[in-house]
Length: 106
Figure 1 (cartoon, one colour):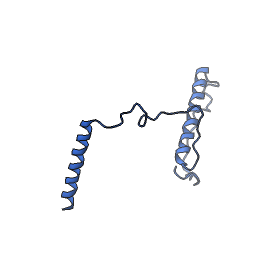
Figure 2 (cartoon, helix red, strand yellow):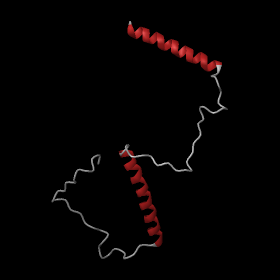
Figure 3 (cartoon, helix red, strand yellow):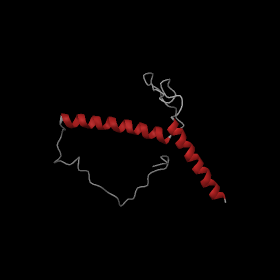
Figure 4 (cartoon, rainbow, N blue to C red):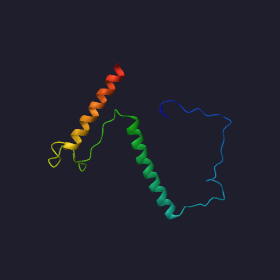
């Protein structure tokens, strides 16, 4: 799986039966089934592309001109400073961490 360049080993004792090519199978599929099959194949193709992109990070990332994002952390409407309550809590946490570090070192 992780190394597709390796060949697949097949045991001569393994066998299977094809239930789709038997004479009792229907000769054609319904239009609804054909549409569903096409949708499944399209989804499988998209998933395969995502899997290949994930497995090969050296590939470049394709960017669409319509793709955009918004940075909610440095926007002008974000508060410029933290609340007094948050600042006090941060100071208490840092002081407690400093004490724990001192106890761990001693």
